[in-house]
Image (cartoon, rainbow, N blue to C red; front, side, top):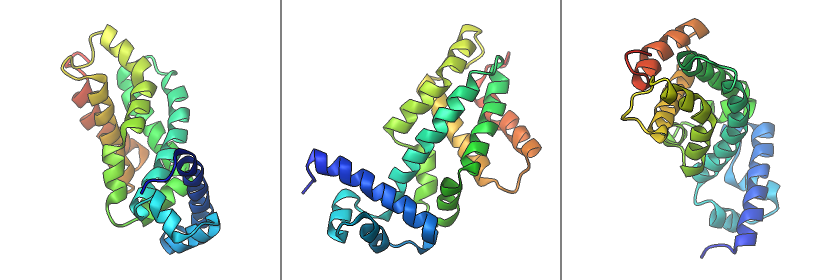
Length: 196
């Protein structure tokens, strides 16, 4: 049985806010679903009616954090004139903002069931649309200059960017110069034509 639309939206937000407070208080790996239900002032049954499992709750929390990160990244992307620079430096900036978000970093570092990595790699419709929107000014300039591979849609370019940024995020053993080199070697040729 699905919750009513009002109950679902309000309760969902209440649960995510409670999860954030619990994760900040106890840490993601020591927070149980019971802790979250108690913090939200709801029953476990209601919690599981809104979120099927912990992974679904984590995905919604990450979705909200990534949306906030995306707004900061979108502003930064407007500052690049060169598409190659935007791909490399914009991606490096994106990864840096994600790493600086303490809650996001804790969740990514402490959830070990691979659902976080899968979510970061595949996203969801809303996140993917936001990523396309954030990158669209850069992509429009690149297409106008005939620098982006013509067979790639904006959605495909955004998917490639998200996947390579996730790789860079997971490679916490690399310094910024090594990350730049990886982005130049992998992301730039994946998106740009030979003339780029």
